[in-house]
Image (cartoon, rainbow, N blue to C red):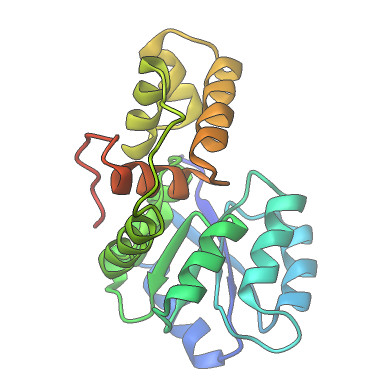
Amino acid sequence: MTEKITVVLVDDHDLVRAGTRQYLERADSIAVVGEAADGFAAQRVIDDLRPCVVLVDIKMPNQGGIDLTRWVRRTLPQTKVIVLSAYDDDPYIMAALEAGANGYVLKNTSPAALIQAVETVIKGGSALDPAITTKVLGLLTSSRQGDEFSAELSDRELEVLQLTARGLTNKEIGNMLHISNRTVQGHLRKIFTKLDVNSRTEAVTKAMALGILDVEYDQQ
């Protein structure tokens, strides 16, 4: 039997958590193993359960989703974080991505799209709502106006980034390129440094905005 993707839900509204749980558990691949109503409570639940994915709201009492995302990245780097928010404001989006979120999905998304987002980040991909992708690309493009991109990526770094955009894990990328997992990690670190980003999501979206990534980046 295939091991299920374990998920913890973090939202201060009981009805939202109940609805999200119902949506996610339609998928045989997903098991919601815990819930919390604020960031501080979530830390205890996450540390105890060590889930594969955390779905977190932006605005909550005590500790919000951005700070919780930073905490997860520091404490459990293998755990993926998807922001599930009603807000599509630019500052929230960029703050979430800079904090290391693996995805940003709006609360009006379909159950199927939410399930796919969870499955995508587990495979190493980035899950951005289509409306969010458009905003991120616009923000990154405008931030680079009048500024030349001087730190060019090598051919191998471009290959790694293209495969990353397709949602492949480090191991899968290594197998395709016949290099070790450690070498893949090294290429990703160099890519992050050259693009001045902190996550796969930021790297892919920024490379697209700069016109240096020529792939079919599928955002369902």
